[in-house]
Image 1 (cartoon, helix red, strand yellow):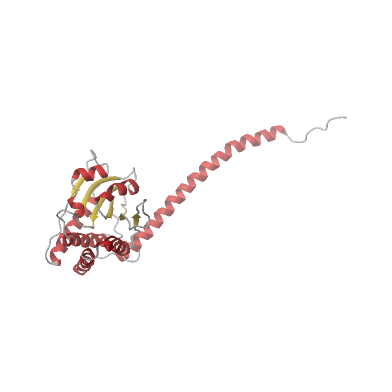
Image 2 (cartoon, rainbow, N blue to C red):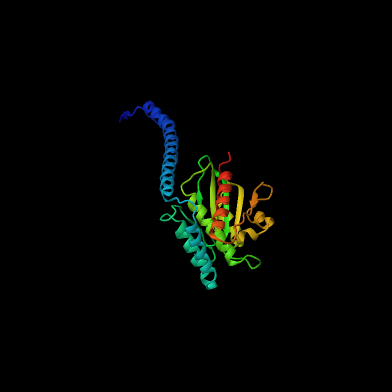
Amino acid sequence: MKAVPMTTDSGTGGRFVRAALTIFPLGLVLLGAGSFVFYFNHREKTEQRAIKYAAGLRKDLNEADLKRYEQVFADTLNGPVTERVKTLTSFMESTLGPENMGYGVRLLMDKNDPNAAPLALDVEVTGSRKPRDLIVVVLGFLPSLTTMDNNSVSRSAAAFLNIAHSLAGQAKTRSIRFVALQNMSALKPYYEEDVSPQERISHMLLLGAAAEADDATIAAAMHLEGRGVVLLRPSIASGDTQSMLESASAILKQVTELAERL
């Protein structure tokens, strides 16, 4: 019996296979590049919408809000100790959040006790040109066991929130991050969980109980040794609300100037 010759052109098939081996990887590369372009364009448009929305909620520093925030913190800190953390973190999350200031609030939870109140929370005004360069404003919102009293913490917390509100939707050259901590022991897990290796902190402004932590403790918690990070401890004047407003205005000016550096 004669063998029936194959009708498939092996030369054509080989050329097809070779072409496929060349074209398919190229297509994957182009598809991957296209997806990256789509992702970054989509993210940029999303961020722009978020900034515009937050800008509509922005509010200048004012005595009324300072007084209101101070009173909330003073009442809570002078109340039952067991309710302090949950009440204040819930208040700050709501106040800073999308409905009031337009921020996306990030919570740092205790891995050993997920039902506990957050160890820390933060929000960010993302920089327009150097988004990975950070100016960090840190509030310790529970008084320490040494010299910090409830009134001092309440004034600092009021300034912290009012300054954050005045910067909502106002993108600067560098990013400004507002971080509220239960206590300074939360600083290390905050750094490990919420500060990426690509981000560089140039200045930290320490408010409330955070101002009592020494430089060595902060440097060790955030691995700042030898990085040239400047630690600042601006004070909030005691007395009438007008004095608080002047102090908050001075801090706002300082933060803005630092964030606008090239």
